[in-house]
Length: 134
Image (cartoon, rainbow, N blue to C red; front, side, top):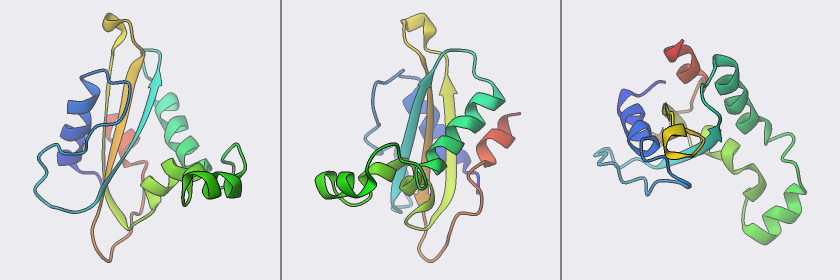
């Protein structure tokens, strides 16, 4: 389900044109577990680019690009499918995303999606974001 609250948090982080993840503190009062995926790309974003990136995160489950079991042994459980795990694991029920043009700062544009879990529930569709902005 799309979350306006998570969208605000994702945009807040994206506006900094960061090179890495947020500290996930954003002032959310719910106390439920959160996760975050990020991607950088040239401006302007298109619906196809955003959909493709979200799909690439999902694809990690089937095609992580390197030895899944080796990565798991070296880096921890499901290290090679981290983006997928954040989107679909741990009972994720909410998503909010944002993207910002960082070209004026000499950087690629930043796409941030944040996810929140609620006990006993599962996410139905992560594509809510792309549909909500086009």
